[in-house]
Length: 230
Ligand code: C5P
Image (cartoon, rainbow, N blue to C red; front, side, top):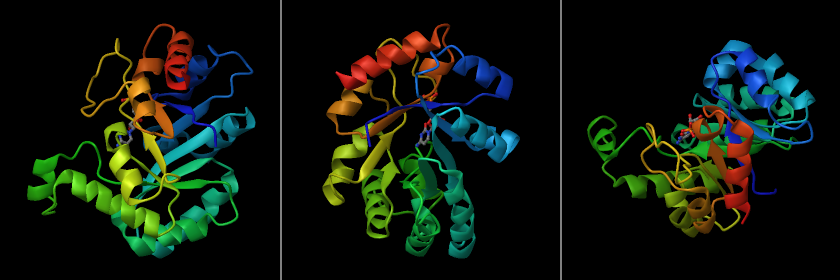
């Protein structure tokens, strides 16, 4: 797989989203992340529409349920011909295996979310009662995902070297929380520039607001791609 810049489509309505996409030249085959917000509103027809327009799709549904339910859901998604799908690694070994089995025969890469970036050391210790350092918990969950058939993880770019260390250089690390030097950090905490993410070994980056919430989204995208591909 080429190392893509994935654009996070976090829009409140599909009209706004299509207007955003129309800024790009027709032959620009974007890789788009559809998250829960848009999926809950527009569902599979929206995914199909974007696939028919030739876009690659990262379906970020972060599945987390009993293995049987996850397998059956993945069997359905396997028919949608999307490029990536997420589950929570904390669903456990059997659930990750079930997700992979459900996707069998499709091109869809299974990515596991390790520790949500919204959970810090304090929440880990006090709310989830996990007695590990955050970084050890992340590598533990990454290894669990790797051992049970996931193709990769979603992780901060800063975690990529240690994840590749405990898994394999081929285990995909897809990094959100990307901010070019000039962009607003917003609510993201562990951020990296596209160049840093590349240097740290990320296989793909996910960028939302620095592309979707600026006046010239196409120009912002082109500049981020230049920095990422340098
Ligand atoms: O706008 P921004 O570039 O911060 O968007 C990042 C995208 O990546 C959002 O869709 C967010 O939900 C997603 N994401 C994240 N951190 C994770 C997993 C997903 O920011 N750990």
